[in-house]
Image (cartoon, rainbow, N blue to C red; front, side, top):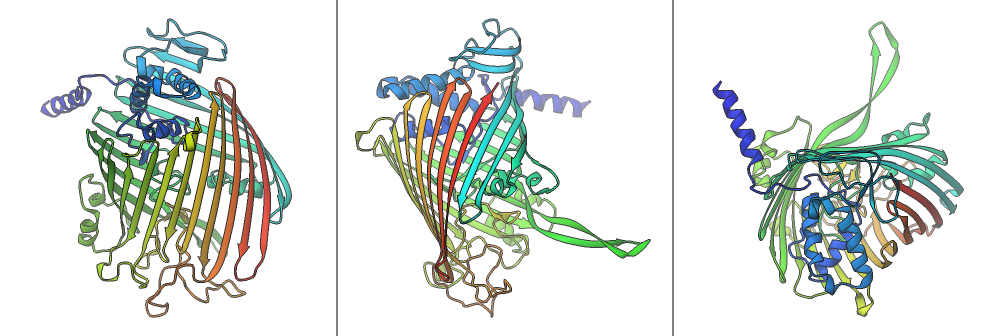
Length: 571
């Protein structure tokens, strides 16, 4: 009886931890365009303490930022006011608690949906199923995407592929605090599988590699409790971590989406995030035979379980600066370690007390706010800190750094954003020589910047959004990478620290490093993208991409031209 009373009291305390009920507790997916809009508003000085170093954010938080911008709409251009109006319409339940601007295609129910319309209207938000009352909200959308792609050049010759992707997204909140979200899609494709595999997101689908199937699928889902100052989440969804404008330093969209638990605390100048993720090691084949037929061997793919734990502490001073400190650790070859599940700990000390088997990283970042319309950000990541060898030529002085500039309305050009960023990763960074699977990877893909160790990159991006339903973007990415030289059989002849899965070998490899040593590889990418929202929640998108890769050792160069056109619908 006492145990039941304790459980009931705990639940009641959680539900009453804030005096004001939150509107929606679920998150906003990291690719939502509202993040680009809010980032520009932060750089223009219209919102303070916009903590976007770890995405996604909760819908209630996004609604608060939009409400703040609405109070300063006189500082916006005509197009920005239209974009703001569009986002406020989409997040109106978070801003006003009303769904009066929504249409429901199939059904609307609940005491708050008396003003919900039916059918499809150009200027109204739409859900297939909508329910809203004082206890529960539910928004369900059907997802349809038709995509066609063409490539010509040296890499693949001439090839094409098309796919039709369908799915659904459901989200909502229970009792104003417990948010839930679920999204799944499945696509059937025709044409070149290899062309789809060149897509950095689609290639993450396991189904694409199943050669006797013509489909690929994705799934994300999570539950999040938002108590205002504190929120806690468990599930699977894309997480981006870092101040990078092009590539994130801690968690980018390079690896496959992974399951995780996450805790956030935000109170005035202090922001704190804890995350523990479930990753996968590199694939290996296990052969076995049956006792009744030892002559025949079966092959089973195996993946080591590995884990990622991280926390970040941020101090934000409006109109001046934000600084962040984070620790990360990758560990494997055992089950979940309770020591890394504690949100309040020093990971370096924990891993030492646990036998120093794991791979620990430190990172520091800074973001300026004292120059209106101009923001400078910088990050540095240490793959173990060896104080005597810091900034030397020793191989174990492993670090990566990044600096970027965001210029809002550059040179007084309205509705424009200009971004420039440089990223450099020293040799051997992210690798690990004391464990088979403790590299900073999942399924062999780097968790952070794609450029990888012994490489650097320049990123330039120009966005132009002259109308509420039209956005244009031009991007340039220049990369250099020093690869480990190979012989004709594919064996490494010299280790220069250019492969995240090939660590330094004590006594065999040089104790010194040379940045960009090895087989030099240069790549260039130019992208021009356009998105037109034909009517609300119906987009027509186009992309042209030019890729160039040049080998410094052989002098060989290949170029490719890539075109895509896409129609997306949210019903």
